[in-house]
Amino acid sequence: MNHYLYELASTKTNILLLQGPIGPFFKNVGMWLQKSGCNVYKINLNGGDEHFYPRNSVSFCESIDAFPQFLENYIQQNAIDAIVVFGDCRIYHKIAKSIVDSNSNLSFWVFEEGYFRPHYITFEKNGVNGFSLLPKNHDFYQNIEITPINDRKEKSHFYSMVYYSITYYIFILLKKYKYYNYVHHRKTSLLFYASRWSLALIRKFKAKLTQPRLIKNIINDDYKPFYIFPLQCNQDFQIQVHSHYHSMKSYIFRVIRSFSLFADEKSYLLIKHHPMDEGFNNYNRLIKKLA
Image (cartoon, rainbow, N blue to C red; front, side, top):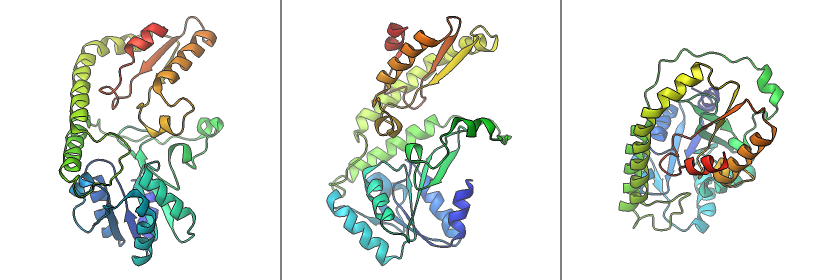
């Protein structure tokens, strides 16, 4: 587990959890923090939040305009020392960060999907992604020593994510009457996500027929030298907030154009789709056209 989380737990303070990732992750984190001696509080903003964190929590059901004052009052009444969120660009989390920035007695901690290793979670103080305090200097990462981790091969979390996502959006729908004023950072249509996850599943099965041959060719150095261009989810805040392009299509165009102009003619560009975006966007036709 991230050493920053141990640092936070060691303070034995009053910790407020806002929105976590879809699923029981924040409930488990809250239980772990409580066992470490912290007092844990939770504000639920929609039916999905409430379903996965039903106990020892309060519900905010008013307009987003009332949230800053509500949060400030809640922080004062419960002597909150730290606020923990998942992702720092959701509208409620941006409001929380602005309150923390104006209060020297508060700290702000952010979970995010792992930057460096699959199946890991990143946990940072003050912000993640473009707001991260991690060095952005190329030389820093060239010179840093990487500690190998002897992990067993993890199974895919795809099916768990599909289950948790469907459950989450079902309860958003079922309790919409209660959280009528809730503002989500993405679409909340259950039908939309069910259709997209089904499409992603079909594409994953299709990829199993074609990827082994491609991987074999890569291992056999049939594509050498090559460069890897990993795509991001189009709706991710790294694209929508921290990028100049604001869409993966324009980013793909820029990279392929640059590669065609400046790469050695014997080089290959391998484009890797983001596994969580396969059901939402398909860039095959665009890539073939640009190529």
